Amino acid sequence: VIDELPWEGSFVLMDDSFGCLTSLLWPLRERLSGALVVNAACFFSEEFLGSAAHKRFCASHSQCVEDYLRPDRDLARIGEHFLSVALAGSPPFVEKVRADWRNAASACEDEFWELFAIHTFWMPTACTQALAGLPPLDLEATMLCSALGPATALTESMRNFHNLLPRSNFVHIKNSKMWWKMENLEAVRGELLALMRRLSRGCSPTPQSS
Image (cartoon, rainbow, N blue to C red; front, side, top):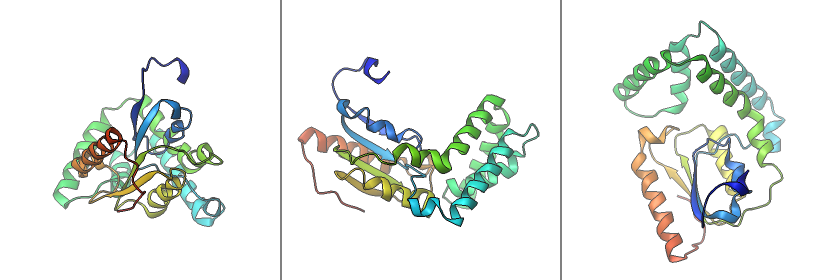
C-alpha cells in the first residue's frame, strides 16, 4: 500500500497519532527527509509490561472502553477523567473546554465512540508490540513531549522511543499535558519550522534534550 501512494520526492512527516501509527516511520523511511513526532505514548519497557502498575493501567483502560460503549454513557464523568490527564491551563480555561467538550461529545454518533474505544483498548500493549524489536532509525527528527503529561504513559514512552531515533532532538512542550493544539500550538509550530530549516541546510546537529 505504501509503495503505491502517489507521493513524489521526499517529505517531512508529522506524527500526531499518540503512538498508534508511529511505527509507520520505518516502512516510510525511504521517502522521508525528516519527522516531527509529537507525544508518542504507550511504548513501554519489558519491565513495566510485567508490573502490577501495568495491570492497573490495563484495567483502567478496560473500564474506559466499557464507559465509552455504554448506550447511557456518562459524558460528565468521561470528560472529567479524560480532561484531567489531557489538558493544562487556568481553571476558567479548563472549565470552558470541559463544557465545550461535553456539548460536542453529546452530538457524536456511536461510530465515534466505537473508534474511541478501539483506540483506548489498543494503547496499553499494541503500541509497544508495534515498535518492539525495530532497529534504530537513521532519520533526522524532532521529538516533542508535553512537559506536564503522564510520567509513564507519555514521558517514559517518549524516552524509550527517543532511543530508536538517535539523530533526533528531544524537546518538551511547556505548559502542556497532552492537548498541545490548545495549550501551546505556537511552540510546536516553531519546532516544525526549526526542523525544516535544519533539513534545508543539510544540518545534523548532535541530538539534545530541552
